[in-house]
Amino acid sequence: AALRKGNLGNFRVVGTETMESATLGEQKVLHFSRKQVGSHEQQVDLWLAPDLDWYPARILFKEEDGDSFEQVLEKVNRK
Picture 1 (cartoon, helix red, strand yellow):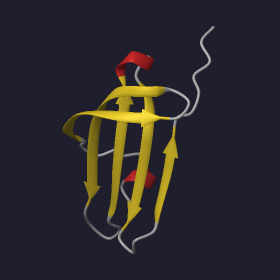
Picture 2 (spheres, one colour):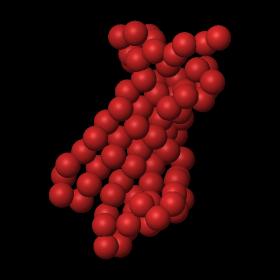
Picture 3 (spheres, helix red, strand yellow):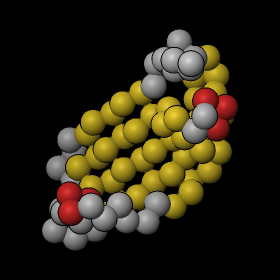
Picture 4 (cartoon, helix red, strand yellow):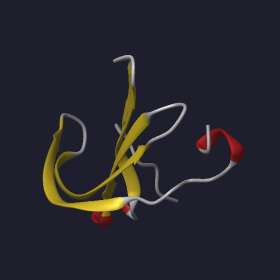
């Protein structure tokens, strides 16, 4: 519930990884993770791509009941 109230919590650095994308190719990413504990447990994993202006290359939300939601970056439009 804290996330819903605007508190982003503390993320920990998991490490540097390589992510393969059909549209963006191989990207080095920095993986962060946060697990909210309390009345509503939720884990959020975030992979940021430094070579793509730190856009989130992947975001994964996992609920305590096993439901999950994932977003993966497919395209970056630079002006």
